[in-house]
Amino acid sequence: MLTSATKFCWNVRLTDGLLAERAQTVRDKVIPYQWKALNDDVPGAEPSRALENLRIAAGEKPGKFHGFVFQDSDVAKWLEAVAYSLMVEPNEEWEARADAVIGLVERAQQSDGYLDSYYTINSPHLRWTNLRDHHELYVAGHFIEAAVAYYQATGKDKLLMIVGRLVNHISEVFGPGENQKRGYPGHEEIELALIKLYRLTRDPAHLQLARFFIEERGREPHYFTLEAQARGDDPSAYRFDYSYSQSHQPIREQSAAEGHVVRAMYFFSAVADLALEQGDRELAEVCGRLWENTVNKRMYVTGGLGSQAYNEGFSTDYDLPNSTAYAETCASIGLVFFAQRMLQLAPKAEYADVMERALYNGVLSGMSLRGTEFFYVNPLAVDPKLCAARRDHSHVDPERRGWFGCTCCPPNIARLLASIHSYIYSASTDEIYVHLYTANVGEILLAGGRVSLRQETAYPWDEHIRLTVDVEKEQEFTLCLRIPGWCSEPEARLNGRALQPLHRKDGYLRLHRAWSPGDTVELILPMAIKRIWADPRVAENVGKVALQRGPIVYCFEEVDNGPDLAALFLPREEELRVEQDLSLDLPAIVGRGVRRLPSARLYSSDPPAEEEASIKAVPYFAWNNRGPGEMRVWINEL
Ligand code: ZN
Image 1 (cartoon, rainbow, N blue to C red):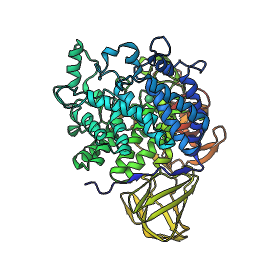
Image 2: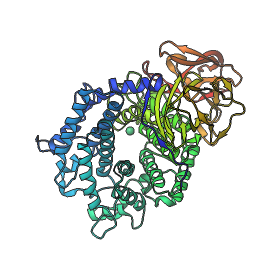
Image 3: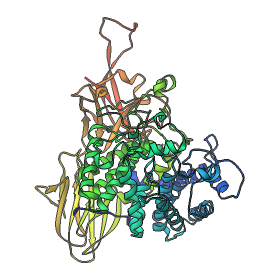
Image 4: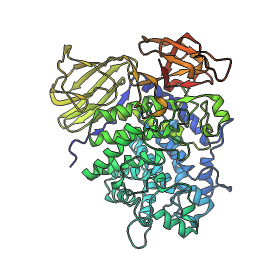
């Protein structure tokens, strides 16, 4: 059995700080903005037509389907984000809008439970005939996640009933029985959604269906081959190999993260969930292997994933090019999901470290500070001239955009940030784990009773964290505080008295005692400016260095440092300091560097001329909020 499992806690309210502000921006700006987008009401942005499709599928309007095969999932993700925001901040207007959308979804559902406007409008007779390329099960997964969230937020079960009928229909179509299809989705998502549903309903059929989709994947004869033949297509004409959808092998045989990153992250998250639910040690070990490969060989320093545009995915170990990176916002979001599942399997700080890295860098960079522009890909070096001129940079936007034809990222950021309060604490019967530091109040139920926690901190900008424990009467439990991997000399005080030495296990400071009302723990996580070097097998970063302070990765922008950022050098011994940047109102890192000057000739036997230059780095997530220009995370080291 997996005895160390903990559950994440939902009864948490962020009170202040960067995450609270970003979550508030989602509630105030992103959810209303996306509502307009779903209603094709954003001037200058590509129309979504997502609600229009559902109206046509419901028979309420004539017309054609518009958008991608997974266009319905934008509606589902919006509903999920609204649900999380209602948990934090009740809002009758948004709840009424969500109820109306759920009514529309119900009317678009077919009498046998089927729900997918693309096939309903275009070709009902072709349902479930192309799982490899089309996204019926993916869309179903997003509706299931939305239904669980909306029920938990409002107690209303209409969407839960809709997805219940949908899941019953899917359970009839798919499975090991003689008249069933042994298929599984080309784009994973429904697996983790079904386990969420199971955790709410405790209906074994929901877990059983998730298990079927997970274990069936990659078995021979390969379902996607048989399915293509049945359609009359040539399976060998497929432009990817099956690793694209992690179906090149059964999951228990996989040892590296392959293919399309978002698919991989959603799949691995579901595998970790399944391992936990069935106490499956072998499957947990598989997750450990895939985790190791992902974060130690294939992850950008920003928590970005995906080295190439071709498959929106992984290439090979240590291949992490900066300017052609894919690093889709959804990939970092998926990594947060995977990390959270790994933490549930075993609370180790290394998982929370990656969760934090991805969240504060690769995820937050996906949204502008205003909350109305978004990045789809998040490279670590951008030169707008290359984006315009080079085919291999055609996937890179040098500026965030209002909306995309393929809109997976913006609503995904919205649902993650709207629910970010549920990523702070996890608990078992007598342990509370603090994974993320941010000002908040939380209530956690342990076997011995209710525990209230208050975190006061300006993290991630300040190193001081003060936790106040409140219990009704003296209560014994262990409070486990994550010591981030980037912090070398942490200090802690209990009720003002310094704790020495710090008793740590798996990266958590463990404080076991009978807690009294008003007990306080102060944690000091010194935030020195850190130079980060990549493993030299990451070819592009040899001779380069990145800057990090606390969990925040920094980058150099043209607006602060002038053009030709590739000509900047940072001496190893140069002292760097933190200074508030007034244009962003965020801490910047400043110091002196060296700039190589342009030469009169393309090639010369004379060494290049140099001059001293002041340099400034700003948080990576905040880049491109002051107009277009070059950006670089990795800078030459002298
Ligand atoms: Zn995306």
